[in-house]
Image 1 (cartoon, protein in one colour):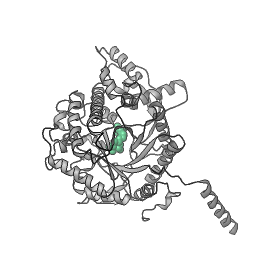
Image 2 (cartoon, protein in one colour):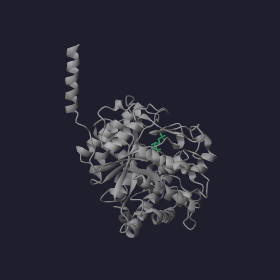
Image 3 (cartoon, helix red, strand yellow):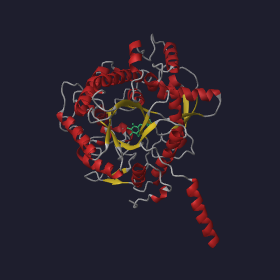
Image 4 (tube, helix red, strand yellow):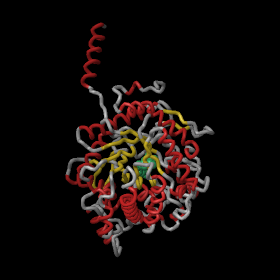
Length: 498
Ligand code: GBH
């Protein structure tokens, strides 16, 4: 007995020496993220215009898993001070949130500014600054004004001009108070899922409208960066980038075919938007150009379904960043598809790869999301080598589990992904300067409604005041955000511990 106790003590001491504490660099920042439609509610209050998500969820409640919508959501339009108080308690250095285009410009156009929209975001930013939390603003997180969708939305080239007008309103009002700007959140998601799939506006013209959307979004991004560069940068302190989603694509075997398929998948999913902005050459990835041109021809189209940039556009878009925003959640295994060109075009047929996830990768509450921490490190390294070592901010990483305050699985998820990130930074020298957990709060999870919970904070949607209660993971993340280190034993972070 004594001997056992003694050896346990030795083991404890030894393991403390061996497991040196994992700490992030001094200047590394921790934050949390949300997005306007997912949390604000107040969908038709004080002059706000209708967005495509308002229209879509109202017209097609059946398409949303729980038939719900963001009309009320977390009520953050009213409760933003509670949200900031939570962040203060959490000890994060910054808050990534998005501005609602139709709340600021109800018709989408800048000749009519909704003063209440400006007031709301001004007060939110002031509340953050009063609590020493840096605002990081996403200009567009998917809630396009419906009026602009009536013109074709992102498939219409004119949208780039209207986005530029909108961006100018934001910069005129907030550039001196907001140091970090993100033009778009995940163009792959809102172009492909929105115009080629099931998300709002529900275009479902994959292989066609999604490419048009991507093209106009890239042009819009380049134009807004150029505006920032010319008219704001010299008088404000800050920078601008774009946020792209990278699911890590790993060859299913080390065979050449599988490795090529994995690289093709990376180019179609990430390179589509990253290559025009972050590569030395600019423009679309060669493999996309080649495949979509060839498939279009075989399908009898007189021109490629993938639009072409002018030489000036390639130049304008190339290098239009101060940092790369990276969203990362999960990993897939890749092998080549059947190689057949279908008569009916689609983005998936153009890419022609098969994606898998292993059954022994831990499940979450989202079918697409399995827990694969090592993919994070690989993804960051691939970005580092492919795009010449850009400065990166992780703008989202998170996980959904069933409701409940004792979310030890979420603690495990964050801890394992942070270890992977730490290795990428300290061992591989990836230049990552920030990590953002998605999300501060449970929120409206798009087509999954409120059925998928990503929050460090639980929201009780049955209570009249939408009560917010910190989960165990909130306490864990508080330790990380305030110390910059991972706890040696995260089991210490029980629900009652803070
Ligand atoms: C992020 O996207 C979003 O930026 C954020 O708004 C969202 O709340 C968060 O993820 C959590 O989901 O259902 O099989 O069709 C992450 C990338 C791309 C992941 C679309 C889910 C749909 C898969 N997302 N994808 S499926």
